[in-house]
Image (cartoon, rainbow, N blue to C red; front, side, top):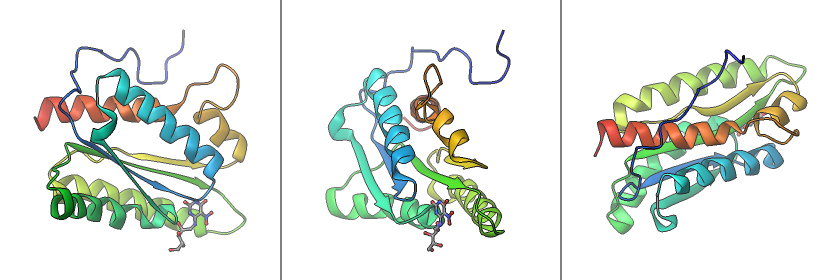
Amino acid sequence: MAIKGLGVVDQKYDGSNLKIGIVHARWNTAIIDALVSGAIKKLKEFGVKEENIFVETVPGSFELPFGTRKLQEKLRKTVGVELDAIIPIGVLIKGSTMHFEYICDSTTNALMRLNETLEIPVIFGVLTVLTEEQAEVRAGLKPGMHNHGEDWGAAAVEMATKFVK
Ligand SMILES: O=c1[nH]c(NC[C@H](O)[C@H](O)[C@H](O)CO)c([N+](=O)[O-])c(=O)[nH]1
C-alpha cells in the first residue's frame, strides 16, 4: 500500500464562492502547463467557477513571491477582488551549479512568509527536482503517475474554506 502522499481528499468543501489566484513561472513550460491544468481541474471539481480563477505568470520561480504578493494587490485595485487563496507554481530542475539550491531555498522561505503577510493561504506549488524525469512524474506526464497540481488545487480549497471564508 502506498504510504507517501496526500491520501483521500475530502470532497465536502464547497468552492463555489471562492476566488483563487494562480501565479506560475514560465521556466520548464511543458511541466508547468501540466501542473497548472491539474490545479485548475481540481479547483473546478470543487466547484470553483472559471471566472473566479485568476492566473498570472512570472519569468521564473525566483519571481513567484513578488508576483504572488502583487497579484493580490493588483486584483484588489483593478477589479476589487479579494482572493481566498493563491497557488504559486514553479519547476526548479537541478543544473550543474549551486544556482538551483539558492533559488529553491530563497523562494520556498519567501513563499512561506507570504502566508503571514497576505493573511490568506499561499500553497507551495514549486517542484524542486533533480532530473527532468522526476518533474514529468510529478506533473502526471508519465503513465499512471499523479499530477501534484491537483493536490495544490485541493489544498487551496480546503484551506480557504476552513480558514478564510
Ligand atoms: O523557475 C525556474 N527558474 C530558474 N531560473 C530563473 C530564476 O527563477 C529567475 O527567473 C532568474 O534568476 C531571474 O531572476 C531555473 N533555473 O535556473 O534552473 C529553473 O529551473 N526554474
